[in-house]
Every structure is written in structure tokens, then in C-alpha cells.
Amino acid sequence: MEIMLDAPNLGELEKKYLCECIDSTYVSTVGPFVPEFESKFANYVDSEYAVSTQSGTAAIHLSLHELGIGPGDEVIVPVITFIATVNPIVYMGATPVFVDIDPLTWNMDPEQVKKAITPNTKAIMPVHLYGNPCEMGALMGISHKYGIPLIEDATESLGATYQGKMTGTFGLMNSFSFNGNKIITTAGGGMLVTNNKDRAEHLKFLVNQARDVSKGYFHPEVGFNYRMTNLEASLGLAQLERLPEFLKKKKDFSKIYKDVFEDNSMITMQKEYLGASSSWWLSSVIIDHPSRDIPAIQQELKERGIPTRRVFCPITDFPPYEQYKTQDYPVAQRIYEKGLNLPSSTLNSKSITEEIAHQLCTVVLGR
Image (cartoon, rainbow, N blue to C red):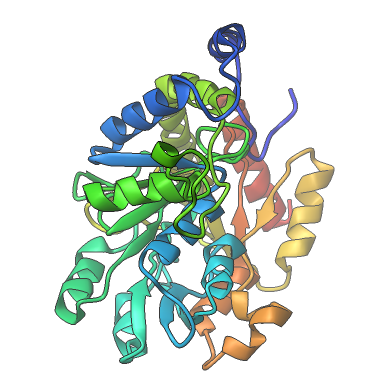
């Protein structure tokens, strides 16, 4: 059996919904599947409104646009995340302000956020890295104290909770991704959720090129072609039905890894905050080996048929973002140098996952 790092889990239910969509002929952006997916998604995460988009990146971009963020404004973000968190800030002409991360959870450090606030700070964007919830209690406290809105990047954390509340429902507007490697997929696609009716209606307007349909093809604002198609939404409906199954598998895999690594002092898993429950999109570890680096360990695992992925590189190491580096980020640098994402696809089995864990221990111990 081929081991998958993370890959879409598609089957008969997805075929059924896709065929229903094709048979209906509503395959583009107009039709019943998109609003049904939005409604069921909002209900799942316990949010009032959901607005589908073409990607998680588009959802983040729209959030910033809706807040009117632009040149001279600052948005605080963690220095370790996927680049899609940060690119939309630059699209808007605003400035990303990077902060270091917590050494155990690998998420935005609330103390560093406090230090980064200036009169130009217009938003704080927590990222629930690899599905692991941020310390939302502390971050919400900062948001309320300083009057700075939170925009959650929950693109990796569908199904994760903090104090029993779903990630992606704490902020003013919050983004999810349905890329092919996410917990559920629509092939591409994303979702914005909010409890603000006016914002939801305006976001729906913006994703459709800001078209006032009551006046035909009349566009009173600059909008975006960020609509989800019914084909994508039909796939999302099927995947949403299977989400509990996927989340259970992810949790089971993380427990297997934890149990096997428990007695190995060189391997430490990403930790959850007290009261947080990760979706475990990607089970991830720190490997403290005295002489072997991550690329060497990856290569040996690859030779054993085990795919892995390095933890995201600090954003300020990329040429377009070097100019935004205002300090050193020692925790992020260490996580990058020693971090590894392990196979977490729901296409894998428990027995395969246990074998992966033991193989990693063997490689690390040099046996």
C-alpha cells in the first residue's frame, strides 16, 4: 500500500453528488449546490453566515478588503505559516508585521503580538498551524483591549476547537480552505464565515464582481471573480458528510504517533493548548538529533517509502519578505530547522501509521 502524506479521500458519495450536479446542468456558479453547501457549512461550524470563494487565499483577501485595509496599515501575522496567509496583505498594499511563535504549539505567541501593536495595526491574523488551535482566549483579550479585529486563518483547522468553540468562528471574518490536501476538499475553493449579516451580504456581492443584479450588468464597486462553482460545492457537500470520519482518523493517527514517540526523547510532537483540540490536519514533530539534520532524515524515510514534508519556512526568509524582517525569530527558526510533517492522509490505515512511527524511531536512533 502506498503511503500518502496527505491526499483527498474520494469515493462513491462524491461521485453521486457530482453526477447529480452534472445531471442538473447547474455546473457553474448559479444553482442550488453552492447555497446548500454554504448553509450546511455555516451550520457545522456554528456560524451565522458562510460565503464560498475560489480559494482560502481569496477568502483572506476578501476579509482584508472588507475591512478597508490598505497602504500604511499593519496586519500582525505569525512568521511561520503558508505564504497564502501573507500574500493578500501585500495585495492590499498593507504591511505584514511578523511575530515569533510559541515553542510548544508553534502558533502565534500572544505576548509577541502585544509587543507588535502600533497605532497602524488594523488587524491580527492568527493561523491555526497544521490544525492546532491558537491561544484564542489571550488573542481575543488583546483584540478587545486594543479594539483591533481578528481575522482567523482557519484554512488548516476545520473541525478543531478551542474551549469547545470551533476555530474559524472567533474573529470578525474567518477563512477556510478546501484545497486538494485539506481535511475536506472541493478540488479548490474556500469559505468565509462571519456572524455579521451586513458583511456577509456585502461579501457575497463582492465575490460576484460586485454586480447589482437588480440593474442587470451594473457594477457600483470594484469586485472580484471569486465565486465557487456548483461542481465544487457538490463535492464539498459529500465531503462535509464524511468530515466526522476524516477527523476521527486524523485524531487516531495522532494518538498512534504520540504513543510510539512517548519514550523517544529526540522526537516531540506539536502540542495543544489546554482546552484546545486540534484537527490534526498534519501530525508534526520536532526531531532533536545531535548530528543528523532534517533533510538527511527525510531522505532515509523516503528510501523506506515514507513521504514527509518540512515545516513551513519563516516567511521573512523569502526574498519578497526580507524587507519586513524587524527582528530575529529564534523559535520559528528552530521549529523550521527541526520540524517535520508526517504522513496524515485519511487514505492511510492505523497499521500503516504505526509502522511509519516505528520506522521514524529506527531512523532517528540509527538502527
